[in-house]
Image 1 (cartoon, rainbow over the protein chains, first blue to last red):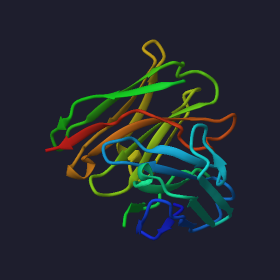
Image 2: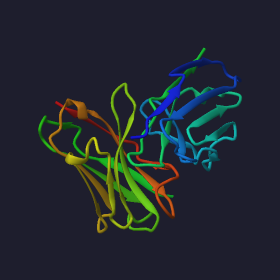
Image 3: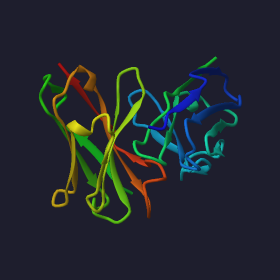
Length: 107
Length: 122
């Protein structure tokens, strides 16, 4: 299985900050890395697919980059509604594994 | 826009079979390009992909669960079902169905999710 290592596991930030979350794959997954936002009691929400493509309806302050084994999710100018847990997921090879998540909370 | 809704018992006894249904509206489960996934979220832990059934009936499962999982589609009811046998407390989780749309392999993420259904094994 492809292992995804997210860092950091938790992060404290303030409204208006820029935050970056990284996801490293145990083998090359080319561009097939997706990012989700999850809030308690809610289903995950797809933010970024194929490493850098913004899902329809997602604010442009979210962006993704990377290829191969190293990927990044960046949130420019945090809004109050962005405090949540973020997961990466690879869709290159079955089983389609997730990272362990990065919990973003308010400083 | 496709809409998904999971349903099923919230409590299952150990060793029994967990059966869940995902009702699809706004689109047909046999529409080309769709993959219908099951994912679960263990309390306080991460997300785990269980498997999918494609629009054409092809299935793919997580090897960690493959011996216990069946995913089927019912085109007459436009539903996708999950059956997980021999459950234990470790199968307690919130179960989600989610769709992927892709002209080829399911590369592009799961963009539509149901609200999830909580299942406790006890």
